[in-house]
Amino acid sequence: MTIPLGRFGLWQMLRNTTPEMAREAETLGYGAIWVGGSPAGDLIEVEALLDATERIPVVTGIVNMWREDAETVAESYHRVTTNHPDRFLLGVGIGHREATQEYRNPLAKIGDYLDRLDSAGVPSGRLVLAALGPKALRIAAERTAGAHPYLTTPAHTAFAREVMGEGVLLAPEHKVVLDEDPNGARAIGRKMVSNYLGRINYRNNLRRSGWVEADLANGGSDALVDALVLHGTPDDVSSGLEAHLDAGADHVGVHVLGDDPMPAYRRLAEVLTF
Image (cartoon, rainbow, N blue to C red; front, top):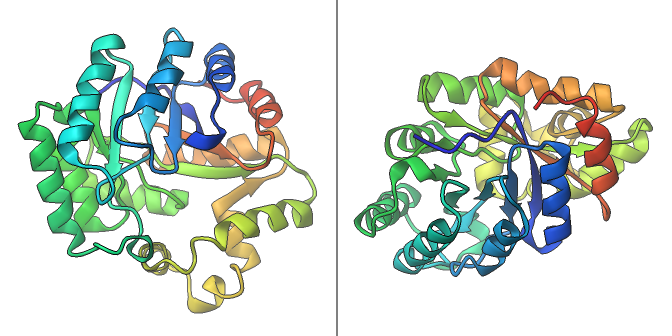
C-alpha cells in the first residue's frame, strides 16, 4: 500500500523548493511535496526537505532513469526511508527523448529499471511512474503504486483511469497562475508550455487527447494554454483542479508558476479541500 497523499500537493522544481517552503506547505495543509527537475540519485536535497518537516510526504517527480543508476537510487531510497519512515515516495521516469543522448526503447528501459529497483528491495508500493501513454500507464498500474502524468488535462486523467483501472494511484500535475487578467496569465502559461511542445512525448500525448497541430504551434493556442495552465481567482483554479478528481485522479500536484509561488499557495489553501 502506498503512502496517503491527500487530495492536493505542492509541486515545484527542486531548485525552487526550500526547507522553509516545505514547512509552510505542511502548515497550510497540503498533502505532499512534489519535487521536479530530475533530483539527483543521492536524494540528499530531497532528504533535506524531509528533515525540515514533521509529517508531510515528499515525492520525486521524477528521478530520471537515464541519468541515475538504479542501484544508487535504491541505496539512497533505503537511507531516506530509514530516517523518515512512511514519508517518501520514489517517483521515476524516462524523461524526454530530446534531452537524453542514450535514449532507446523507453518501455524496455522502464522494465529493466523497475527490475533493478525490485532486486534492490525498493517496494513497488512506494514507487510512482511518470506515464502518459497507455503502455506506460499499464506498467505503472501493474508494477508500481501508480502514475504521475505531467502536462495533462482532466480529459487525460479520465483516459488514464480507464486504462489503469481502479485501486492504483493516479496523481497528475497541473500548472496554475493565480491572476484574473487572462492575457497576463496566459502569457506566463504560454512561456512555460512552449518549453514542452517541441518534445515528442508531450506532442504525441496532446494529439492523443484531441489537440491538433494548430494548437501545438507558436507556443500553443489560447485554448491549449488555458487547458494546461489554470488561471483566474482561487475559486476558478480550485474548480479546475477538482475536475481532475472528478475525472478519476486521487491526488493533484499543484504547480504554481512564478518567481514567488507561496502567496498563491496560501490563497489556494483557503479554498481547496485537502
